[in-house]
Amino acid sequence: SPFLRRRFDAMLDGWRAQGSPVNPQLPGLPSRSSPKASEGWRHPVWQLAAAALCVAIGFAAGRSWPSGSSGTELSGLRQELRDTRQMVMLTLLQQQSASERLRGVTWSYQLDRPGAEVVNALLDRLAYDPNVNVRLASIDALEPFVDDTRVRNGLVDALASDQQQSPLVQVALIDTLVRLHEPRSLDLMHLLAKDARVNDTVRRRAA
Image 1 (cartoon, rainbow, N blue to C red):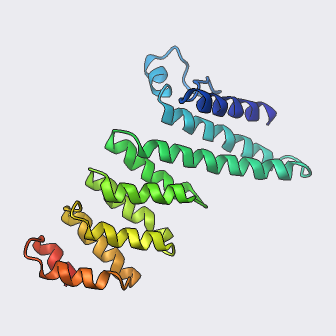
Image 2: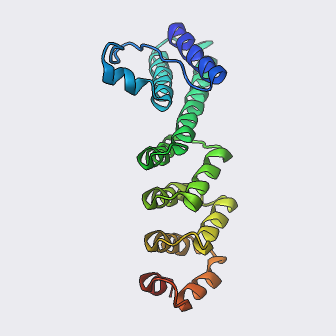
């Protein structure tokens, strides 16, 4: 509705102008008078999620309205919803908490047409995230994009990296590259299978 659209635009403008989103009191959400609720909703990530919810509600309501000029508005709302989801995901991936970064990887499944920025962020988490669970989740999240040469190269490079010391992540990468029949990984598999410094389970899987 026009009200929801104005509320969403105001939130987004505030986020862009101040570097953190404004703190609205949305209908149906906990009141500011609750300390825990207030503390939770001040978190930028969840305020962005609230913005996404506003768009989703407006989109759902708009589907039941008469057609006409609303077609263009609905298309714009869909794009805004995609952009907001992507913004939430990228914000979560930059959090210090491993559980928040893991949540960010999960948000990627809600993006029907993710941009290059999303793919690059997932590749970055795979290559450099200090948490094993985040790296494992990044592998699964990247599989829908394996037609992209950057993703295939990123998977191979992650397996070849000296920083990739977790046997769990190495085995997951090996299994993924085998499923993809990625030719670039063949020489790397041979090297891993013969390297005495590599974990025994990883060596057997590579062989």
